[in-house]
Image (cartoon, rainbow, N blue to C red; front, side, top):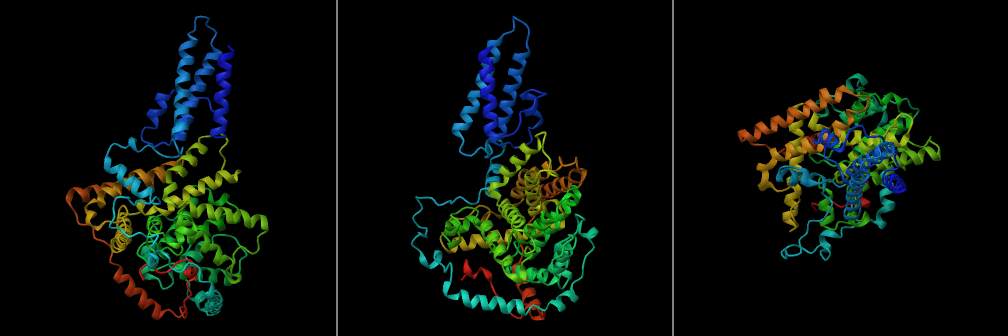
Length: 529
């Protein structure tokens, strides 16, 4: 049957081109596969793989069939139809990792999911003439981007800042935390920051000490001091969030049983990328920068604007000799570390959310998936872990989760106020007048955005912690939001004025803060000026 053989070779070639993975023999038909995966949101590439596997299965059946009366035509027609569907998907889909929003049963689910994961596409409408033309509005969009004339001054300020860090004082004041406590999922960074004088140093230095390293303590203190300075005093994307993500990154790695298998350099990657993943965040999202034609969006061509910015600032700090945690590594190891840190920070852009989940799912279903021996597989996995840590507040206790939601609402609405003030289009989730939608948007976020991440992590060593702890918390928090929605509870927004008062008081008491140098001066000017 030469025709059948040709079809089989074509399918095999397509499969190799699309995925690079070996074809697995399918034990169940497409209907069973679809039934078992009905609750998972699949991407076009996953649908393609499923169709090609089904087609391969049928062709293998044809090749092994000995009955002379066997109806080959019906089987080949079936395969032809599948191939035509594959061809249609390949030629009509601009991104094979896009999800089909039509799979969601409710319109509001689609609306909120798009709001959470598609924030980088400008939402300007051509027929709205009352809005500001930002390509002409130099007073807002053309802030000084790179202040060349101030570089020498800033270098002096940087040296002055580093010189004035009282390392013996900081070292004596820090209270190290046992790693058994830090590996507990219910460790609350919010609570710890309220009661400790040096919470950022306590937690992050303790996490750093879980790694066997020979980095001088002075370099670590300098690095942490500089990183802390670059975080802005915003309600959500601040040092507390950065510390929480780093702690949850560590905790998940321990619970999944992969931390002890990590090389020293990968553990350092985890620490640096966790603590720096939102460094310099202004409290406004990528869409704000794109719509306002902000200098950062010009530098990064509207692509993962803030995430690129965070990664850039991270390595600007690491380039300072006094803060360089990577100076002992070889050139080869440094390049690998740099690649991984950049990849991890960029993966926190929610625009790539479903793509990262899909790539992980495709890879872990392959029979040669091995995150212990294969560094590429490990990188795919730790991307999933840092993303889970980044939005982990949905899987903590209700009271803490609720506080984080109040904080992020404060940032959203502050951005919306700024957009209205500057006659910009209102970004999704940033409209105060739609505050009554908060409960539904949170349910959608937890159910369709956060849960898929944690569900995939259950496949690592058949881990029961994720299923019996994190996912149960997510379900429980969804029920609480549903209860609030049905009862018409008023959701209070975080009051940032109290935070500003506490911050000013702490600065007066903090002997370390004798001077302040903002490394972001080269890139970003205060948007609220």
